[in-house]
Image (cartoon, rainbow, N blue to C red; front, side, top):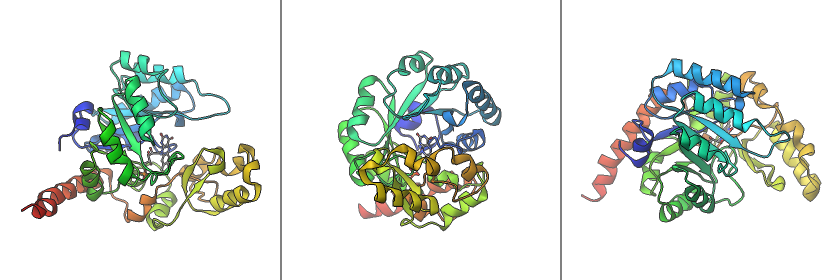
Length: 324
Ligand SMILES: Cc1cc2nc3c(=O)[nH]c(=O)nc-3n(C[C@H](O)[C@H](O)[C@H](O)COP(=O)(O)O)c2cc1C
């Protein structure tokens, strides 16, 4: 399949694996790139730029295909060494960067000077237009369904994607709720040039996370996510667990008085405990509604091949059939 995204990124299939904290290590990124998609190493999961440089080298040893690095700009108590991370990316010869969170304007000149393509992930048409205006090469449009940070507008992809298609000139991929060939064809029909998947890629053999995480995703239905930290305007979609229930109870009890300190126990530093040790109630962790569409733990290649085969079958069979 050829789209503006496969052309821009030099990949075989229009499927990107979004950056994921404590999931996007070299093993997963390389597996996705080897399967013909674009794998992404999560920059800030590496505590220092030196460690990111090492992770990039590790990924390069596992694949000859292009892969990317995610750089997330979120409010933090102490700001990460972004210039250092950018240096590690540039010196590591990475060709694609997925930015997310705040506007990436400050790092854009350095990335572009190194010939790096920048895909900015955002949750609204206005932020997508801003990304286009500052020179991003593509955007990843993250609907309300998505795992992680859906923003505060709550616009699902059935509206958000055609709105993005109407407004944008640069290529964009649909993110949030994408799981299979049906999702890919629907995303293309709504005007996107491909898909970005997070949660679906966690439930794969190569994802370097504890089996408990994969099993929790398989067991979950589309009813099992919750939105937390809404009163802090830092909304995150997470899988419902004891920590999410506790956090939401605090939100109800404290109302407008809620501060980050009140929820620190449920959100700060919990990812290694969950993703690596499999302590599933150690805190809240991002998960999309798409969990309801995930019933198995295939290899990344099986998953990607299945998506592409199903998409082709739908386009050539079911859809072509409707128009004779
Ligand atoms: C466990 C997890 C961790 C994530 N961490 C990040 C992150 O650090 N930076 C980022 O930009 N997006 C992050 N995301 C969002 C994904 O990259 C992607 O946009 C999102 O998962 C798409 O929605 P989906 O889960 O429905 O596929 C995370 C998602 C999950 C599920």
